[in-house]
Amino acid sequence: MASAAFEEIAETFEFLDDWEDRYRHVIEMGKQMPALDPAFKVPGLKVEGCASQVWLRPIVSGQGPDAEFGFEGESDAMIVRGLIAVLHALYSGLTVAEVLRVDAPFELARLGLNEHLSSQRSNGVRAMVARIRETAAEVAG
Image 1 (tube, one colour):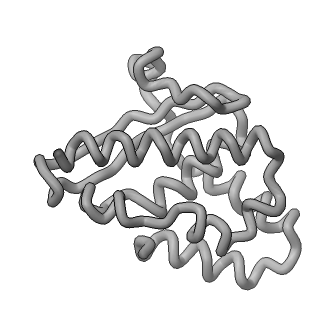
Image 2 (spheres, helix red, strand yellow):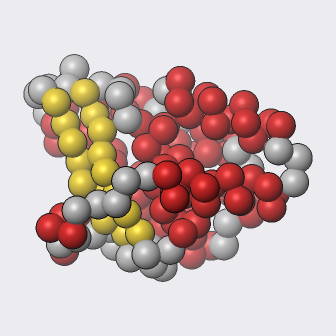
């Protein structure tokens, strides 16, 4: 189960045959993301386990399992900003209950990311997904 925005990314990736084109597309997605307010670049929002610096600021509307999930994020590495944009498309707008049902490894594998990211980048994506799921679980109760 993925959001419509993520499905659009998956469709775009189907048309991009070359990994370098996909890589450039992910970087472009990161460039289009709004910058995170420096006030939110704090230790409590920093994601540990990433090779580069990553901050994720959850934005949740409501309470309990039906609360709508979203987040802002930023990284000092352009490819990681793009990966944050991919995760934003995957999760934003879902309820926290739906966030917990998303099979992120399966969905991201559809994009072929597993095969082309370094192990450090893959660990970073897993750390970001874990942080998103942890936040959703806390809100869901």
